[in-house]
Length: 338
Image (cartoon, rainbow, N blue to C red; front, side, top):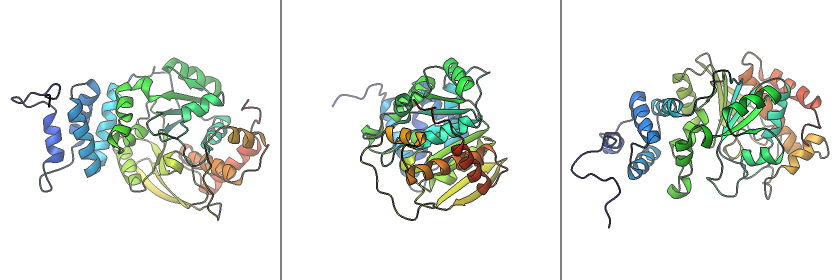
């Protein structure tokens, strides 16, 4: 077998101590401190770690499960490394979208339209293609003629014009995008799938995140607190996207001014709804224009918009947010989707 590229058997690599910390054994293994995590992930982003080391590092973290300190350190490293936006580009709400839709249509896009209609500047960032048979947000927004940017200046223009803009992770942090695409090779998610949701590159005061596994809610919340995020909300969404499942009770984990709160959003549909054969945008177009009566789609749209309002306006109640979401729907511009 050929020697792995970059291997130096007589001299320890500078990244090796971080692997040793994570993989020393049941009694000696520990989590990285926030500073160690930032240093280690910075080396990965700069190309100072070997591919073999990166794979070992990510999978050791996957087995151990990342700590809030580690997650906060990884996010800080990405914020330091990524292509920074111009100072004048600002958003009210950071909306992460990395999972793609598998079982239902991307109803949350209609929630985005309602929020933009209400005057909230919403910035969406995401990635695509790392999991097969899913409809990713960038593709869906392009099919709907909604604003997708290719650089920060375009993000600024789109937010000013329509209060809405999507930018791919590949543009502002390409090494992280490359790590995201390793999932088919690894067969498992890694900390990359978690930390990407918390990047908030425009430093929006409000951040909305979704998880696939409920246990990760507290992890996101604790890391957001360490990162001094003013207000954030995380919940288990459909397919891991920021979209409420109306046939299930949803626990919302909100952080506001360093104080945590758990809110129960009761289900609005009593019966289980079957998955769609293939997620598409024609169905959400039809609902927006009033051509169909889709109870699941409408309930998912309104509930997701209400949850977003809870983080944008943290002083309002859940009931008030639901009423506001319904009013926005009644007053929507049905010609918005051409």
